[in-house]
Length: 378
Ligand code: GLA
Image (cartoon, rainbow, N blue to C red; front, side, top):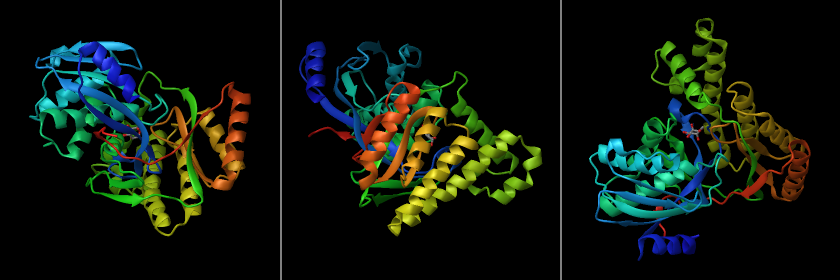
């Protein structure tokens, strides 16, 4: 990938720039909790977006995407927003740095990636984090701290891409560390690195390669449900809500909002339970919590789909320790905690049965927990 980027950069702009990379992410547990002030438990993975970048002494950004085979050129003022959606991520990052009083000048860039698109592995966060990290290094003497870099990516989603996301993906992409998951408290933004090396188990993703993103932004709707319930409870977020509190207002809210909030309250606790279980090397409990999350995401939060429920059923039938839909939902991957001796059987079974039913095999990715945003020097 590096050689491809290098030769494309040389061809388009001449000479060379500096290389940067940032990662996609997985999340062991804690889904749709980030924008509710709860806990998440993600890690960066060994799939990245990488860019070669060089200031060009103008006020224009010129950037080429190898994977999309598309070129964009734009200025740095609000009115200069590019049309291509992929370029809006980069424009958004520039704008969000400038809005915070940081510095951005024109630059040339070529980028490529191997984070699968639409799989729920946060390729967009990887793209935002790669450029946020790079522009901090090139123009701001690295004065912007890592959390702010993550917030720059998140604000880009909110203000330039129409997704009202939480902080998890950008945080994981920026702060990820090889061999470690991170438990992040999305209210205080305190986090802890957890060494993650489950002996005797493999963490594997099955990418259904389906995407059912609906036009009316179901993600933003889920968030709005949570905010309505929090407001009804007199709370800023559902972080402090309990099932007792929710039951007390049940007759005042819609059934839909009730089930959304129920999921979030239960999921919040599951992250803490999984951390305790990991401390005790108790992977059976980790796995049970993963199944419970899947069930909640499917039945109460309603962000699963037929294909992912099917993959989850196959996992259960194969005796897989834990399995659940991962990320925002409506397609993408399941994440599976599998005993090593079951791995081959499970993967074969999942490929064959999924193919029989849906006409294509899921893609399989073994998870390797890796570093987040960085200068790409290796
Ligand atoms: C998407 C969002 C995240 C988070 C997850 C669900 O990935 O970008 O902020 O809300 O969905 O956990």
